[in-house]
Image (cartoon, rainbow, N blue to C red; front, top):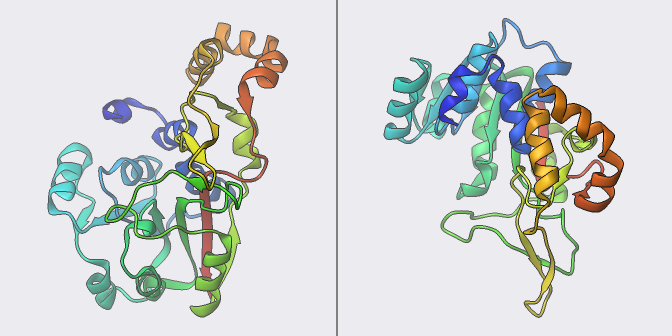
Length: 263
């Protein structure tokens, strides 16, 4: 994604290519955060913080990695901070209207304590948006592929997020992905990052998405680029392509999007 700086609307570009960015894109399209302070926690390579900045928001990114912050600052600008949130929060109480943490919580040793720290930085009515792999997405009798410790330390689902919300006295809403799934159908051998295989209890493949439709993927690429021919052909053959090559997830997604609200 090195070319993201050339995109007119980098936030839309991100969400059209990776489902994990849809929750923040959707939230900002439905609520007004202009002239409000936003913090991205775990800003990493800086793509999302940059996209928010270019969209006109008052945003900073914080990451514990000095190298990540140096690289992001060099590439995108001086709106990144090196810091440990558990220390940073002590001097930034009730400061932010929105905190975003994209695919970070599953890497933390003590996620509940971490979220308590984030809550302390929110103003009253402020929101905390978290995305993470959705462990309840697949069948309860299946084992899904994911990163093992020390990369991913936790698997989260709606029930575990509800527990965190209740215990920390945070209101909670889950992101509905129906709009995203209808607009960006998931092609087998797709652009949206989902785990390729799901195994049953015996270790056999329950289902796999690692097979593709070259026609569908090609048309989808043209559609994303607003190519007139690609858009027309996609509409013309959509019923055939969708029936034969697409997988729809309804309101659910391999990505779990959670919006906590401080009250």
